[in-house]
Length: 371
Image (cartoon, rainbow, N blue to C red):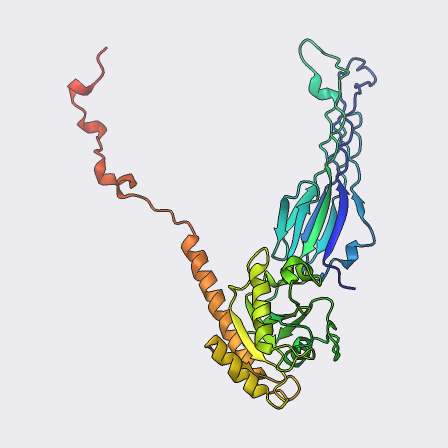
């Protein structure tokens, strides 16, 4: 089961109570305070793990509470800190505070993590309250309470390229032909109900996402449009499949523009991403005419492919591979330009010739201190 959204209640453990005790040993009857500090409560941490592929593992338990820290003891013995709870999620998971709505962290890279509920600090024992006027303090601190909140986790798949198009355009079949992914394939619309990922081998390879089919009004949430469109956000390149002869008799050129409109109308406009346009099902008679008409409409290249016969698949993979390589190079150049450089102005450089040195042997009598 693929789950890409879940809400949880998380609570950090309370800190342990500080101890109020006094040293009492043979021949040492007034040894003074020796109460130890309480241990810190455990925290709840969410960490991005590359081995996790969705949020299904968090659906069986909706409340996560870390243990409390141990109380302090006598002889200045500190209580033991509680162990943190670590929840593993796929990279691409965004963590929000459900009630406030603010983003706590966007876990993009493997290993990224965020403390969603910090454990309370352990209380101080009475040894910390000793003073010159209070030699036998009985004060101590209770442990601090751990943080608690409701959080929402939202997964947005991270893929180099994403397949978009109307239902039944052949996206799942294409993914199965260019990668080892095995999505469900059938002749009826909306066969794909959740995203599928596949790795397209090559030099270099790339990750391809098969996204559920979109329909008109998807940007407003029609047909679970918001659930599907948000997975397009992190893709670098779009492969737009256009079915030449839709089963509902719609015009394929109109269908292309309809999908582009939904990408534009989404909360985060997605129509600015580089796009490879393909007319699928080239094995059907007349598909090449649809390709020519769409190419004339757009004024640019439109590929004709067939996931059944393999026609044009290598060409699509080559185009996408080159686009991704260009985008990665541009991202690297942009990151290099933003990297701060430390520049020392010439005036700030200390040069030895700017200073005059005086030898002790060269001091004149007038330079000597007068008695």
